[in-house]
Image (cartoon, rainbow, N blue to C red):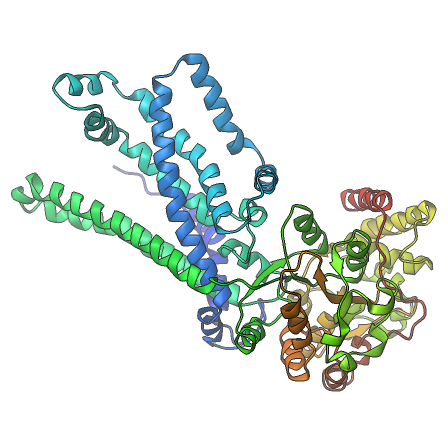
Length: 625
């Protein structure tokens, strides 16, 4: 008799399923949330699905992902299978050498492979885009196919192919009629693995792509920079597709198997016929899907005119479409996750027309001769810009940059749990043991050192190693006593949910948090802070300076700036729009509005390489202590 499972094993199994599938269930539920919150369900709505299905960037990414996955899978399967068969007939020394080389891309960290491919394509002067991504996917998928097929080749009786040829078969017939059928399990395993690796890849795709070509992983990564529930809708649809595929793969064969048992005729003749038909239909279907996706993607990106490189979730895509219609052009729009990654792409040879970097990076790009001066005669909306944003230290005379958005850094706090008198401590409240374990810090080297510097009364741009050492000690002590959680943009939703008492945030994020949770307040310490400005600049390699100036001028229009500000949540460089949101959004919380009147507040300046490396080493120690 079979023993029944005791309660213990059943509980373990149940917990395992909860561990695996509860996150998926939560994601699916919040895809129907009516608000932006990723933690607080406010009501049912399909608006995120509507937004998903009308977002050309996401649709284009789906076409790219599917077409590249299918083509890369087909090519890598053929290459991998042929290589595995060839290795079985090679000399031992050559075979072992090739297998060892084949294992290198599998064992290497993906980032190493990604950087290597990026350098290769740059050296070959290949314009990065769809073709380079496809070649990269074929390259890293092929080794997995070889690893899957080769064991089957080794276990195969090689005399079967010789016997077939002795009986009159050609070498090609022996391959297709004898060898391939024996290797089918390994080929199918390699094919599925290749498809999974391709459709799921992010790191390699991110470094080898360009010209506005993004797959699903890149789009999702860029969407995570800020609270964007469209991710949940996209994830839910992908989950449903996987479930449907699994049902087809597992349920339909069992149904066919039951029907086969009812008829001897079906068992002896029809199944083979059906298998051939099913295989042909699947092959034709995959080819048709790949062609369809390539055609649709080409239709979306058929005439790139202006290449724009901006931070993720930092421009309303609907406004880009509006600009395209008004100027009868196409904008190839790409996003980066940090100023440093943007700079790396520029160094690697990527070509863009318009960039949107931060102040200190603009200073660096000017010094290294990446930018061309702005022709202010073509910026007819210059008089609408907040005057104090022009002629800054990082761009004397506003020669190269047109202000885009701006703000400061402060502390968002829970008014119910944080005492007003404690706020008088300024940045030192972040070391008040009363709030130990109840604060979020930005996982950012420069922002964290800025806090320590201002708490100590030093400049945020100091190059004095003694002062930097004191700032390091301040941060180490804070880490030990306060046990802060270092976060990124997920701090927004966490503070809306009231998970901690305090968090270091940018002013625009502080305003959004307060608008979603009235228990929150915002303060910029009197010791001063970082007043940051992001600007639109034109590169020296710009191929259409006329259109670049039109694009920049377009985003200084009042109606455009209002819509863009509503989407982004930060403070517009357009004076009337800034004042409107300051009066409307910051009513009762004026601290969220950027204030440049504090003489102790500063802008970040470009760091020399030695100082940058020194600070980076100290920051690594802070987080490791």
